[in-house]
Image (cartoon, rainbow, N blue to C red; front, top):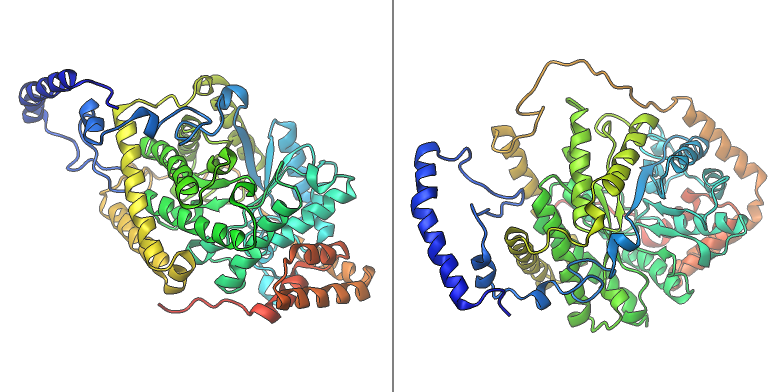
Length: 563
């Protein structure tokens, strides 16, 4: 169904030709153009002008491509009234040092209007090592909070009820353990699992592609992640609990372009869904679906990406998996700034970068907004920089007017053309991954990693040669003294944490711990769902290292091959 009839299109075509041969030609002959090529950050050529002719060439149809918010294909948003009904939630990614320090930061952020807290775990926590493991030395509390056992999670949420605030966890390789920690801590507060407002990242496949914090080989790791999805589905926990976030974010931060981010994320999602369906879960009974994407600085490409991926997702769920439930076809978003673009040089510029990222998220209708702090390239955010992030998101929500209408950029000839182009390119790459055996097979072959590495190298060359301007890095540099305050974790904190876990091991009932760890190993061998057994181990204060070591004995550890 065309927007314009043939007579109108012919007139537009004729008037465009006249414009090109007179006004435009004269302007170019006189002034030229300030760049040789105009492309999106992903290399998609950008035309000088977009008109209805561009959409007509694609046989563009409003009902097919856009529809209405809350209705298939969900291009315009996943709920009928979008931000007019529920404004975007603002999450703050935070956590550092000890559980006590993180509890203090969380209470401060909540007092300043934060609505969702995402637990940033330190490296040893993400890799499933105990604090006193020699491999943990020097890393405790540095890039997130150190979590060794349920005791730490109890402290993190002391005075913060887990049925009153949305909580997320950056956990992937050991996500069932973090889920168990949160459930057990909530029960200690008198909060049932059905009341917990919790989302766990749980996308381990992208760790092999881009991020590197994996523990087990890909196939048992995939099974481990899907145990959470099955557990949530079978225990009626999906009202407030999201058991997985399909993450393109980290691939993008590793150097992927927008098309790769979309295609590889969808391929990973298919692997999880197929595994869960193989366990007898009905497609229409899947828990809520959510994705984590970058909101980069190429404003139009990023907005179009989110719109295109919602449409791609809805089509895949309907056509490939035969879903009928709109809740399954509608993909919610958590978003974050492209922190790899933040610079240590002239760090105040990062405030502007973060603001643009927040605008991208609001304009594209994401459910949860996040902006990285200006000191991201230098340290863990200070209280002041974390507050500025929160205020930026609050200004975007309450002062810009963006949330007043749904999908405000819809109908732009450029936006709709670029949305279609991204959908088509991502579909082609997604189909290539499927033809090679799917996400896990491609991970084992190193396909995604190699493709992203090539793209990252091309981006590096562009920055190095000046083909892509990076303000303060390859152009517009200046001599400067660092004038902002930086966050530093107390160097003595590591020893205090080690003493704390040693004390825990003395005070707990170690016979119960030994029995729980034995049960874990047996459950892993029998390939049953591990979440209930992990929950039992967590409640007797087994440590994260002890639990992961039980599984290491069964699964082994993954060592990245040389491709």
